[in-house]
Image (tube, rainbow, N blue to C red; front, side, top):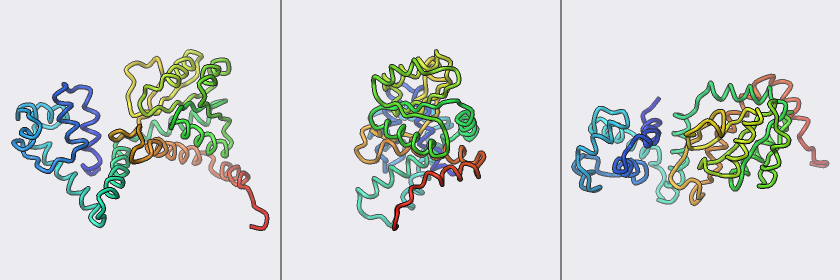
Length: 272
């Protein structure tokens, strides 16, 4: 895999083990797109020591800052070459955000996990998709798409409904919650209750769980700076990328029958 698909996720995945100062250095490389990459230039810009840069690079898995800077420069050159025909800064920033999400998704995707969850979708008696706010739109999208293939499923996006679901959940259910931040209280609490009732629970999020008492597993999705604000690209985009992967694998199992089911859902317009 090309380094451009690795360097940003490597930095992000290393954040939890960093000190406050090292996280400031990480954010500089993640979000500010520095021009000068020499240790002297970066140290001066951030008011840190060269030793701090070395420790930061080592936390990311590199031998030292020089090796890190070399790989980061490769990433920059490849990214800049990709957008060489784009001249408007705003256009480039939006497309760059999408490219960043795609690149991170390449690194995060666990194909075995996708296949495993697709099988659980196939085997579950009932499937519920939990989401609130912007993530609720993803829950509704999942319901519509999977229902057309014959899956018995429902999107649950209302506060009260999330609480009442406790009366319907049992060990034959699969519950998939969406929360970009991993901090949507109603969704997290509802997942925790579903898990206690014996349902298999999955959280789609940019954040890993510190404990496994909320969901049985986390399906990681890519993130970008201020993604949850939706101020430049849709926060649903990284979630929908993973949904597409789940959908494709679900469709591939007994594909002929599922294609027949899908075709039966196509509404024909008279005179069209």
